[in-house]
Image (cartoon, rainbow, N blue to C red):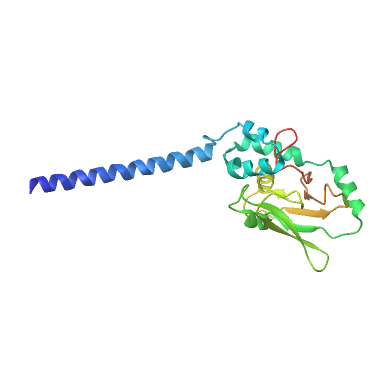
Length: 202
């Protein structure tokens, strides 16, 4: 009887220890996410990929592991437009109504996604266009990486309910079919033919 009681107590202690250990592992993992530990600044594998499609696949599989402090500035640099360039593209297309979306609505659409989806655009019957998510990067149509939007939100400290307006416009240039700006911030963004990277990718 004593043996049975001791065994039961021992089992309870062991279970309690395992549960406590699991809790500590979860806390440690979440802490690393918050402070940015465990991420990588190494993009050599990305740079070694022979073509855009292979680079896009690498980003899809590994992009979330790259340190945001390294990834975000390069994304913004690659997509950035000067204000005059943006105005020239806008005026060159003629009269048009931009697609205006609040950050909170864009965020709701891209929430939970990184390089597993891309932001694309769909032509509507009335001649306008709307924003949609597409499954993968493609050179056949204009699309933006979702991390571009996260990098803008991070830089501007846009919260989940922020109502800052993003304005998307069409242009006549095939290499920049749709560009956008973030109202009142000086952020004007251009389409990139590469899915992202330092110097002239990412």
